[in-house]
Length: 168
Image 1: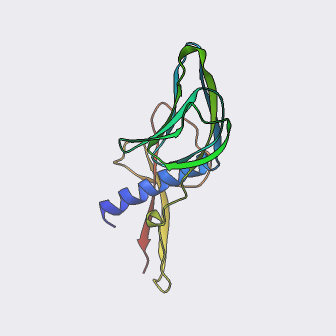
Image 2: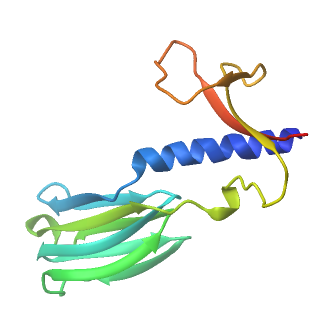
């Protein structure tokens, strides 16, 4: 198996670990008011963010994506519920549009993106026997077979990859 396949499989394992840890949506509420006239909620590259509700006086909410900004809620919008969705990387910015005397909050739902099928290891029908091996390393050079289970943290980082070898 080529080095390219090892790196792809390593990335696959790391992505699946991240998704399994993140797995569910989280809710984030951000506020502005008083001395804090701005606030930001960042949506990572592997996440989807959705504005779901807001309230306050003279609150403005903008979405920024790829250098483009869209005003979602302006200072005249009444409090309420909304559904504005953006895929990361992106950001939602809150502003106290009336200065220090204005205030408000907004709540966002942040969900991890589903696992991309192009990063999946596939054993085709009638391909014959294949060996799937999880390996670990502390230096990305020397790899040893590993098993599913719990690994304790040490002073040295530990890397994991999944390898597929065609059988005989």
